Length: 215
Image (tube, rainbow, N blue to C red; front, side, top):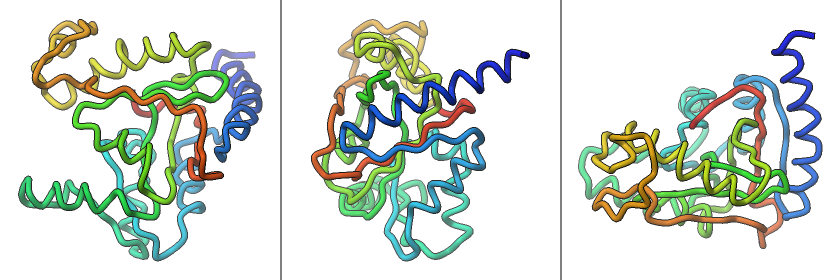
């Protein structure tokens, strides 16, 4: 058996346990192999006419979900990237808290279904916590860690430095690739959200993905 086939088998088996763990936390979960399947599943979950928004959402971008939403033309899309001023962007960001479906990913997840996210401006973790009717999170299996401590470490030492570099920030981690637990004015780890349960049944919908997306 070649490495790719073995890894695919491993992720399939691991996903079965992870789906049960997420469901025990009042979340809805699915497993797919390809980016195309992930995009199709997300579209299947979003009824026509729904209002849709997102934060950074690199994983959702990577599977082509935003492009597919625009191409379908049947959704009310709240996209701050289409705005022309900071004031307009803030208005759209606030409106997104009342959208039907909010798209995103996670920085890390534990094997027993706890979600970990760090954020700088924190509109993303705020929306994850409360507001939008539903969350659709695209999560590649490489983000699944054994323990909460390991998930926190991944979020701080892997995802955060890459995101700081992506946004052109001047944080220590952007320059060294290593978290310095900084208090820099552009700190990308201002708020850390640990989601261990969804009080609203199936508000959080997790699409687990074999192929790697996001950071």
